[in-house]
Length: 572
Ligand code: HEM
Ligand SMILES: *[C@@H]1O[C@H](CO)[C@@H](O)[C@H](O)[C@H]1NC(C)=O
Ligand SMILES: *[C@@H]1O[C@H](CO)[C@@H](O)[C@H](O)[C@H]1NC(C)=O
Ligand SMILES: *[C@@H]1O[C@H](CO)[C@@H](O)[C@H](O)[C@H]1NC(C)=O
Ligand SMILES: *[C@@H]1O[C@H](CO)[C@@H](O)[C@H](O)[C@H]1NC(C)=O
Ligand SMILES: *[C@@H]1O[C@H](CO)[C@@H](O)[C@H](O)[C@H]1NC(C)=O
Image (cartoon, rainbow, N blue to C red):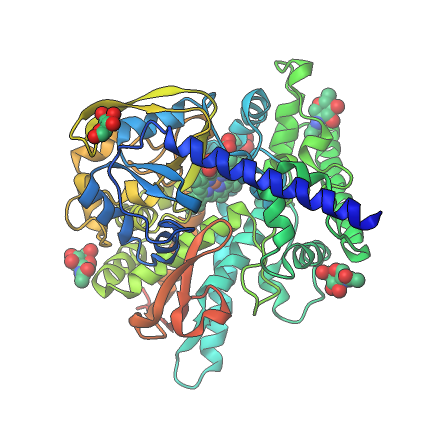
């Protein structure tokens, strides 16, 4: 009886797999871009994916572009292909038509597992509604009021490094910049996001682990404990299997309850604050309450202009029972802590913290590779008379601005994203493509279900726009950006780093000022030098971002070891 059941189940699974493979092959055979040019497949199963993933210096896409033009196809699993284009008109089309091009179901599922089913993963009207309520909290006036938090945390980190230098005999400390920056950005999003002290920077001094951080650790350990999970892979491919609960244990269930309790408490605090004191009368209090994003969101939700049907429920913001992680706008706030390195289990991150710490890490890396640029930046920063600049003072520093732009262009923390076409479509092109038959196409046919790559770094480094030194770190290029760059359909700075259109990064202003505060404080105080030979440095992606590694110590995970020396300042 049992065996017969098993055989039936296996048979059904086999038939389903065969159906899936035949479907994929048929789909491929009838693809409208069958005749597009592109690199030949290098593996019967992985297509070109292996080169793609192993490409540590990001030169592969640019070399493909040089060979096959701006729009080409490449091979993915099992002979299926994907379109790759850095054509600005096509990218603009993908990013602005969000009713046609959405995150694929699989990527939403896996992002949702990491960051919770919040704004990053919802689509359509639900997204529009959440975004409308959230937008005001991320405006320039709000970010201006958060700058103090960015600066405070930057100074705390500066003092920790200075103490390490003081302990050394030779006036030099070796620091692992990435993990420290992760802690700083995590503390920042805790305070700026929901007025919660995570205190990852302070925890180093032997303090009891933070309750929230501990809860995240338990959940994350259980989620990722065994590394690659075949069960999870199957769930990704076959949605039908997602209803089968994977093993959960008591620790995890308790940790989830802790997270929800803290989240509810924070939401209740925000509501009480607004109910008792109103919003306006209470800004800028000593506690920092009423500047944080959560309070701004609760206030926006109480606005009289907002129809009842568009209000966010508490569940949208905090969590649903049984969900893996808190939901709602949890992507950046109550959220999504991802363990950064297996050797450093106390480091957590969220979308906001992980992307921004990655960006600042790459900035320091780039500055170690060009001491002229590092010195020039420091001279500009030392010209400022205060250690505690405002947002406007930070934004008035032109070379700091160019350095931030150049890092975000060349080392975009999120190197690429993807979409899927919900219906057949015709995509306009700025550069026509010539197929293998020699036929010239002015536009491109896209078929329902087709996967689309939004190649962020490849667009930011397209030699056709940026010239032959596109892959080099040259802050001075921003004195006179190439005219072609204005065609790049990004929400900020002639680049795709924060993508563009209705789904662009809502937090880009927040992130830019946060980066500037950290770089300002650290580069004013220290000289930076890479602590390993440059030949040992590489890049490796985590679930979300692309970060540095030391290739001779891959097991340590992502890291950036630096020597820091205090800057000797002449007293005025
Ligand atoms: C250098 C830092 C950052 C980079 C490079 C970055 C990049 C991005 C990118 C590429 C997306 C689009 C993802 C996709 O659609 O596939 C995105 C979305 C988003 N980002 Fe950021 N981000 C950064 C910092 C932040 C910060 C600091 C916050 C919050 C405080 C934030 C909040 C969000 C949110 C909420 C979305 C989803 C927006 C939507 O779907 O409507 N990001 N970000
Ligand atoms: C439950 O999860 C915790 C945290 O990941 C882990 O330490 C523990 O070993 C797990 N227990 C069981 C019985 O799987
Ligand atoms: C910023 O803070 C100031 C006082 O600290 C307050 O008057 C102002 O309303 C705040 N602005 C926003 C947009 O929250
Ligand atoms: C939004 O407003 C509704 C109606 O007043 C309320 O029930 C809900 O709890 C509020 N949600 C949040 C997140 O404040
Ligand atoms: C270093 O930076 C300076 C200023 O940005 C630039 O002129 C120079 O070409 C750079 N050198 C290298 C080796 O990249
Ligand atoms: C390209 O050429 C092949 C055979 O040479 C032909 O069957 C096909 O229809 C052509 N495709 C296009 C898009 O012109």
